[in-house]
Image (cartoon, rainbow, N blue to C red):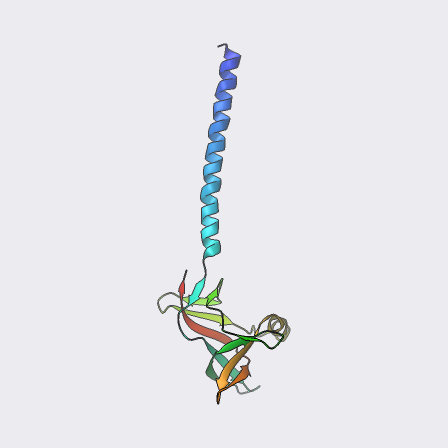
Length: 140
């Protein structure tokens, strides 16, 4: 084997090794990305909504979220899994999802994208407008 053939063979092996290393890095990176993409939160308890009323002086109370509704008026059970939450407390295993931002324009835009929320009063579903949702949860 002459020097040119030896150099070409050496370069070929270097490229193969580089490709193997690159493939390993991409594989490990995809595992990390897919793992974080699967991360989310599972509801482990009753979902409650903070419902506030009043303009100057607000009074707030918690209501159980019994159902969510779509634009056609169909009612469904609230979701049991969420990709993300506004806040998570790992010591208490509690999750919060904020419905309102404090900006009238952003709140109106966000409200148009959210389902309707319902509680039960006197055996009937009653629509509520929560400021935020709170529930016990665990990270998955």
